[in-house]
Structures are given as C-alpha cells and as structure tokens.
Length: 85
Image 1 (cartoon, rainbow, N blue to C red):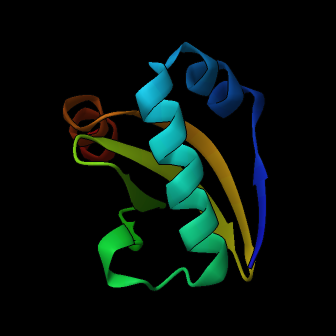
Image 2 (image 1 turned 30 degrees about the vertical axis):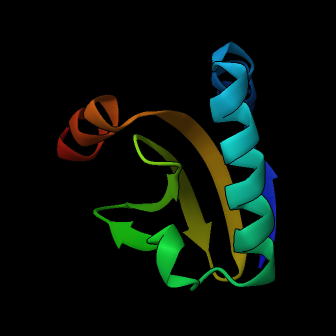
C-alpha cells in the first residue's frame, strides 16, 4: 500500500510523548511490511481505517484503493469519540 500523512497527523504526532512516538514508528514499520499483521488490528471502522499504536493509542486513515492517508493519531478514548461521531 502507498501511505502518506496529512499535516493534522504530523502535528498530533509531534505532540505525543517520546515513547508513544517510538511505538508509532514501530507500528508503521510493521504496517509497511504487512498491513494485515494481527497485532496491528488494521481494520475498517465506519468511514475510516484504524491501526493500533502501542496499547493505548490508535491512528486513523482514509483509504482509496491502495492509497492510505493518515490524518489522526491519539489516545484510545479520543479514538472512540472520533469513530462514533
């Protein structure tokens, strides 16, 4: 898959604690190797696609064919609000 990030994702990423940023980078590397790796929980949720970032964080993307555009990353509780709205 082809991956890109929006400015909104990059802005939120920069504000994450260093340990979470490292977890996000590791999750992304795993996703690049195999998006369907079970530990990533890459799945469609409503209009978005979600991936696990460590234990308590998620990232959201839109997907069009093989293009995935990451637009949000944050804590699981905010993620739940995002996908329910």
